[in-house]
Length: 124
Image 1 (tube, helix red, strand yellow):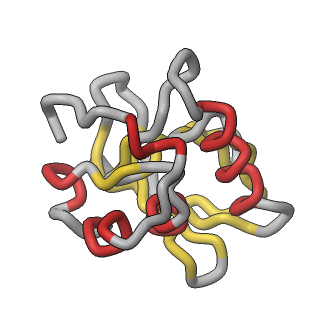
Image 2 (cartoon, rainbow, N blue to C red):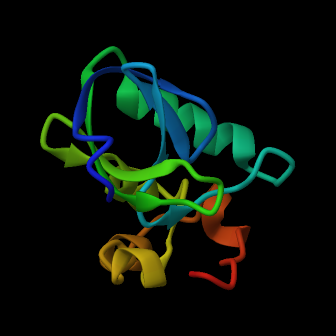
């Protein structure tokens, strides 16, 4: 990640199921895919992210840039990895090429959820 953007901590606002805003900066969550706005389950996945962020400080550590030019970051609420929590709840899927299969164990044991029907894009 280029040095222009470092770790950011503050109150976060969910933008959609995979994007959030912290300290005025928009981040894409590292290593996951979730239903897009027009997909089945998108609203449920978005609301899950809202609940995870729920009025607590979020720390985001930029890792790379997305195809959209957004910083891709590992984000944490307390010690909890936000991406892992969404995958474990069935609200997102592991993107193994990006995450190195970091969230695959959480996905394997996830309950059926809105992300179950979300196809992995070719870059995952």
